[in-house]
Image 1 (cartoon, rainbow, N blue to C red):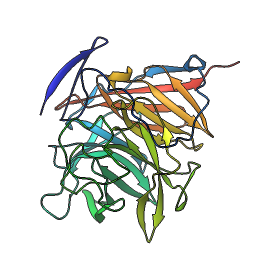
Image 2 (tube, one colour; image 1 turned 180 degrees about the vertical axis):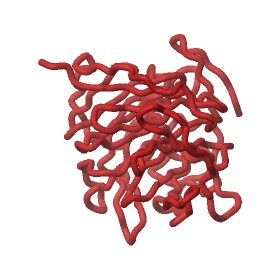
Image 3 (cartoon, rainbow, N blue to C red; image 1 turned 90 degrees about the vertical axis):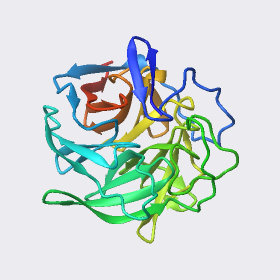
Image 4 (spheres, rainbow, N blue to C red; image 1 turned 60 degrees about the vertical axis):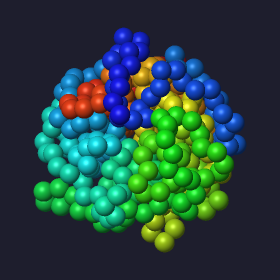
Amino acid sequence: MRFRVAIAGLVACGSCGKGASTPPPAPAPPPPVAGSGAPGADWTCEALPFEASTPVGEASGAALLDGKLVTVGDSGQHGAYAILDPETGKTVEQGTLPLGEPKNASDDLEGLSTLDGKLVAISSAGWIRTYTRTEHGFALAQGPYALGPIDLPVTGGLGDKPPKGDGMVCPIEGTNCGRNYEGICLGSATGTGSGGACVGYALSKADAHLYCLTLENGQLLVHRDGAIAVGRPGTPADCAIADDGSIWVGHNAFAFNGITRIDHGTSTDIGGAGIGFSEAIAVHGDTVWRLSDSGGSPSLMAKFRCAAKAR
């Protein structure tokens, strides 16, 4: 399904489940790790020179790998990716990420991150694929595998409302179902789940929470406990972990392309820093990249320098 919505002077478009005309009321969430809600006025984001777009369609996830910025399209793009020069934004490579078996596995790749030098992709249903770099693309090294027990059905809807019950993963063919994971961020973030220390988080658009990910027998496992609240359901779009361990959550146009930064339990809302219907976010030092899922090709892009104001 494709649709267009005008919001705050931005033309937003996306694949099925990329938004709704009004954000839904917040449901009762799991117990969050609450932040302090520091004011966003303490931060500024300055736009930097960068290419305006990349040919890959519906950019939904982004990650830095080997000094380059990798982005991937979501449902209907069949694993299409682009590699960008992070300084200029020039697209230096395009290709397709292999999706593996079974054939009915969803291609709704919504988030990218890196772990041990490999590229990690998450689907909205909660399935993981891990890739290694090859001379002319990527090879599927692991997956697709589920983040935990398959305990949610594939249902219709836009993926902007939490599912009933405590389930975390729906079947491999699902798109925008269950928690509707919009992002994955792996790195040195602090936090714990029932399986121990988190190696990162999976971001749910449906209930606006980050869920702890641990490693078990070489695979990522999602945990419901220790969840971090990050805004309103329907607005979280992607997450990234910076070098200092802070977690950055990029929101879509229904939250004015804002950013939430979480550092040792302190949550800071940063003003809008994005373009179009922003989804993907990547962070390195004080540099923030945002890419937009505009419902087709090309995908808009922007680069910012975000920093706390001097006191």
